[in-house]
Image (cartoon, rainbow, N blue to C red; front, side, top):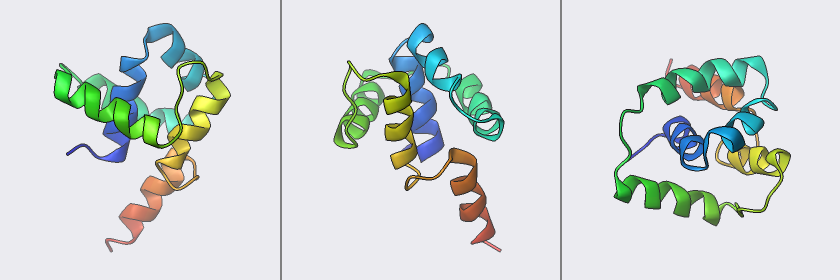
Length: 96
């Protein structure tokens, strides 16, 4: 099972380079710093993972015709509406 950040990385690759870049361009620097290493880790996405990730984002409201800013909002829903890095910080601070 993929962690939320891994799902976002996979999703951005699934929707294509141009569209993914337009969404990343709207993220703040800390979100990008959290996300880029996850994107770089991806070597292969099996068809099962691709289907699972796409289904997860569609359940959050993703539609192919959304503007990049709307897609970013859907991505942030995966992190309870917070910026990606804020959610990751909270998760790790709860482990202490």
